[in-house]
Length: 214
Ligand SMILES: O=C[C@H](O)COP(=O)(O)O
Image (cartoon, rainbow, N blue to C red):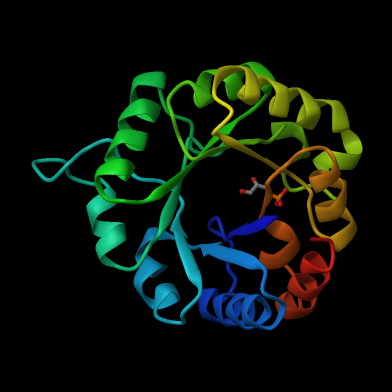
């Protein structure tokens, strides 16, 4: 199970979380990555933790003010990127363009989706993985794997039907090792989480609990 911690725009210390994630990953052997704001990618990557962007633009170099280029985040140490997060939805053509841009920059990709139908559509674009996140459960206290196990199983089946090479993650409300374990039992290859770590008083303790569920 891959644990990907999205820091969103929370007012946490990205270096504190990154250092904790690096240390827990090294001690446990678990794969843990941190996805900070674009402005923090380089200094988070400098901690040694696996670092992901929260978004990349479909654009390549050129006259594209305000873009976050896949090439730029890769040059600053990112190894992967989220695309189409529920809080940063894209047009279908731009989801495709962002996945293609990430491929050009040799970034891994996880395309987010609200439901199994969108998971199937996202899988058809050929990302490395898709993540199913019911928007109404994001930021809540109950894990998607507990609140709606059927959506995770249906997402796994939807991706499998389109492209068995595409892994399925689940996210929303994940904060404990038991949540990670339950997600794995439902067929998820990893979890995408945010508030459980980014809002924690002791991010390292939460991360240690999370890896106990792998
Ligand atoms: O990117 C992370 C997801 O939106 C889940 O967020 P959450 O763990 O705060 O529910």
